[in-house]
Image (cartoon, rainbow, N blue to C red; front, side):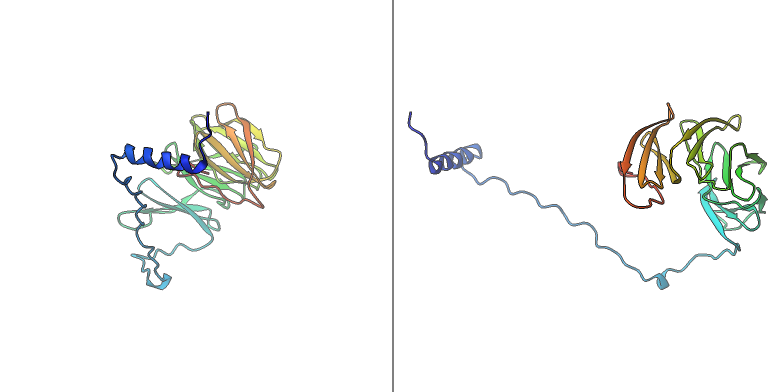
Length: 228
């Protein structure tokens, strides 16, 4: 058996390719179409529809067809109607609302740092219920998932799981490091820690199932497009 030289193989490959396309050139590879051009606007050109003056240090979230704003100094939360842009009467929630506020289970979830705890404001009646057991001044922003409220309750890295029906802490997860951010998505609870790690917790077992090194001092978490 005589070995076919490399050049001969190349010729055979070209002939086979031409036969596969009926003697015609193969179809050209389509280049991806360019996306829309990036629009850049100077900040000075952005004109607000309305300016609402709510003084003091504050955090906010959207929910209940409006925007909720918490004032740390006043110890209140105020709902701004999304259609009229008018603020409702402030609701007193407790001393020094802090971290981040969220909407879940028919309530506004407001962490309190002055008298540590979590205030829940009923979205229909504005009635306030406060959960305080196990909380210290280092309260994190709450998230919701699998029928529970999740919140960091101290500087040591304790993650509390709260039953929204009874307002009781049903589980505590000791992360082993101070944590600064919390998120729920992709079927898991995600926690960024001071150990430069991202933890993935199974919300059904309350167990850390993955530890990911992410870099120095992670401070917030966002989830989308199949990624964290």
